[in-house]
Image (cartoon, rainbow over all chains, first blue to last red; front, side, top):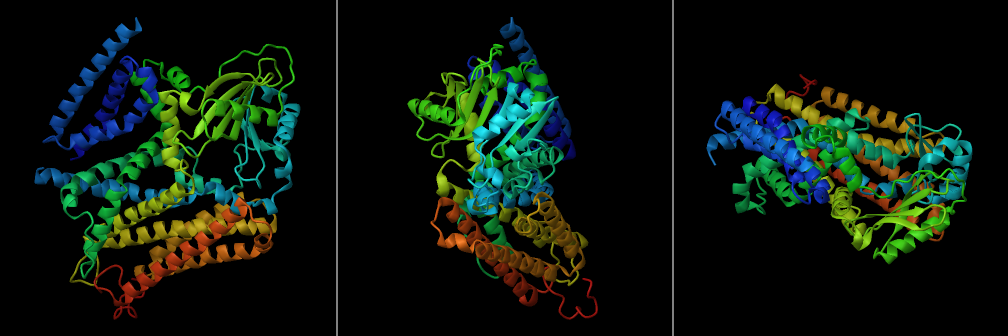
Length: 84
Length: 526
């Protein structure tokens, strides 16, 4: 229970940030900036909730950790190509 | 859903609710009152008791400010009074510090606007429990927990709720009645709670969230993007050539004309921002309120010398970002639909406070020992904390109203007495709830709150005696409304007190809420 709680809270935070960064990098993202910023807390809370659906803490850490790596990799690519 | 998952969410709902519930009760009670912020400001200083500084014109404030503090010309704001009894005040920046002053205080500016304002104090209790920065972050974390409590509560109760949303099983089983009330209010006002959990977290944790997102996901470009998205005036360099500025009245009239030409129905200026005042490139930005749309704020930026329009964000021509930004405030503060929406928000706010109070009662009730007079320590502690904090905060806020009135009567600054009365009564109530038998403390604190609230309202009705016979204005109505609402609210507290006493004397005996009838003489400390 505690492990899943921590996974959702600690890994959900960067994951939500990365997802917002990705949405912002989409065309027209700048025009929806405020709405995207508003989306941060719901996403984070969704991560915290989702973590409890995993069977145990290990699985929650693994899945959310993988999601983080994927999201930040995509974000890095987006910044690299959009920023060029 | 699996039974074990449901059990997990039960634990999550209980813990987030318990951790956040106390602070949320205060936020919702103070927030319900804050809906009538401007009316409370009028209640404190109605035009017929206004200070002399309120009679100083806004133009005179601007003239005196730039004469006395020439460095302020670069960048200063003027906050217009929300009620005719108050004075406009200015704020400006000096060596990284922000100064605030009305026309009378320009010689000794303070570090916050309207320190003596009761409405602003109640607002501070609502958003930060009255503690700047630390309290604000604390309430931000509370908002996130609140969001989690909402989601877990919905997951838990949704299957059952679909069946008996409107079922109120009034009867012998009191716990079920409380549970029904808790669920019905929770679900019916869910959209409203989602708005608050969301905007509350954003308002309180704005700075830290922006810093985190900027570093983690925006490549360091978030602050510029945000400034662009919320820009209301152009950035201009000073020309270095002095020029006469348009007067305050001309600027306001010009801004309102421009706003109407862009389709705004309503544009009541409440704030002005000047840059390079007295320079040929001076800019005046006027913010106007419209309470008939979700985008409550409109912005018109003018050339302060010529009155030419430089930029507008108003009516039908504004950007998506600016509408969302404005709507976020409107939905949180409930100032987008006049009196009807205000009363709706007031009632929903009180219902929210009830939600947290009933949540604690349910926690206690489900741990009650039905066959023993002695109740578990944790439920006794919880009962004392609930009574002390929740009823104590209601008592404390009524105390702040009383202190404001007394300070005004004595002609002294209200800021100190407000805080002493509020925090003093709060801690006194908590101590009282810890020492007295629980059932007695509940009824007695409710009586104290009810009497104090009614007395303040009645005394205020009497001291404004002459106003009721003068020509009535909207301010007269506001003051009368606050007093009548005070009498109404106080009466409700007295009814609650009566219900608590009846329950203590005649309700189920094996409970923290019962007075120990037989054992009372032997063990008065229970």
